[in-house]
Each structure stands twice: as C-alpha cells, then as structure tokens.
Length: 221
Image 1 (cartoon, rainbow, N blue to C red):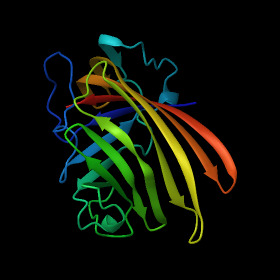
Image 2: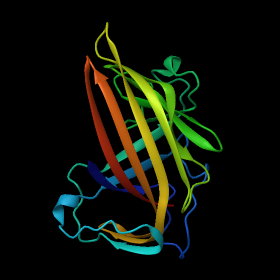
Image 3: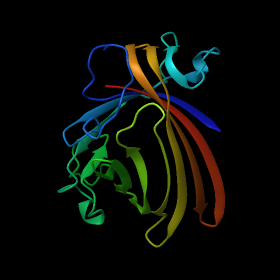
C-alpha cells in the first residue's frame, strides 16, 4: 500500500484564520481562471511522521519534515469549451492541467463536470491519446466537511496504441476524518483532513494488477 501526505492550498488561500471547522463548498472548488498549488511532504525524511487518529480539534506538526523533491506543482483551471480535446468530452465544463494553455494539443488536459453538489472526472486528453471514463468518477462532493464522506467507482478506457484500447477500474472512498491546526514547512493553517483510499485495477494487454493508495490531504481556504 502506498501512503501519500499532501497539502492542498486553494488559490483563495487567506492568512491564518480563527479556529473552527472548515467546510468546502462548490464555490471553493477551483473554477476557470483559478490555480491551485499542491506540495507533497516527504514521509521518508522523518521516522516520527505520525498521521494521527481521526477526530476533532487535532494538531499536526510537520514543520520539520522536508518537502518531497520536485513534488510542488501548480494546477491551472480553464473553460473546457475551446480546449484541445473538448470535442471528446462534450459534457465537461471545466478543464485542468499543469499548463494554462488548454488549446495546445501537446499539453495534457483533464476534463471535469462540476455542479453545485459534486464534481466528476470525465477523462484526459493528451498527445499520447485519450483516457475516457465510461463511468465518470466522482472526485468531490459539496458541501464537504468533518465527517462528510462519499464513495464511487469509475471505469476508464485508455489508448495503448493506435489500434488497441484497455480498461481499468478505480474505486474511491473519501472521508473528512479530522480537523484542526497543521504546521508545515510553509506555514501554519486551520485545516480539514481528508482521507482518500483509492483502489485501481488494471487490465493491460491481458495482464491484471491492483494498486491501493491511501492519500491524506490537509485542506485550507
């Protein structure tokens, strides 16, 4: 099992706020024109890294833990309409990628459908081909706060080459399992901790394998 610790900072990040629970609403989720920065903490750099138990009014001190080399990246969000692969994802209303030029077909673009109550990943377009969710995967639910949860599974089809496609199944179980205060190498924040257990099952050219990943994200706004 792979364990990741991420710090999610919305583009609307404010200075350290008063104590209390955080609620992520549809309006907090990135929209066209926004960007979001993600940093992975390097769990191998400190033997005493403790995720801790779920619960309310917790505190985490990761300020002495290093940042995973090369892990900081910025995601840009834009309108799906007019982007390079828009015709392949007609239901999408939001595009996301690491390059803000979504019209350039050499850039990878993720396509999402966002409503007032949830967001689904529809697939990805890239120069290497398409990854299309035959059953779109829910990636967010609103409002989302401590003790909120959802689960979903999605089936996606991806291009192996010009003539071959394979499929994979992804199942997610997402819980707002704790809230409190977190100290990081880049600052101290009020936070909502989100536990995301992902199980992926691939059938690649006749070979099957499974991957289970647990991701803890600490969100602030």
